[in-house]
Image 1 (cartoon, rainbow, N blue to C red):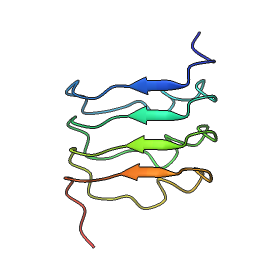
Image 2 (image 1 turned 135 degrees about the vertical axis):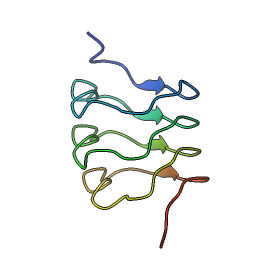
Image 3 (image 1 turned 180 degrees about the vertical axis):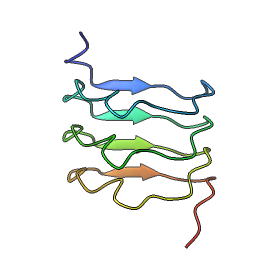
Length: 88
């Protein structure tokens, strides 16, 4: 089990889809890098249990809708969204 994992880098892995509960047991995660993948959307609750997350990099994906995605990330200090398909 990876319950004490603090840093997770999954960049440049051609990830298209992440299961809704894939981060549920990573409660101590402070850094998550999902950049340079093929992700176009997330479930709104995918980051729900990441209450200690400080840094999240979602750059260089195909994200276009971020509604409600970051609601539970109350102590997030750094969020990277560059080079996505986000429309205002």
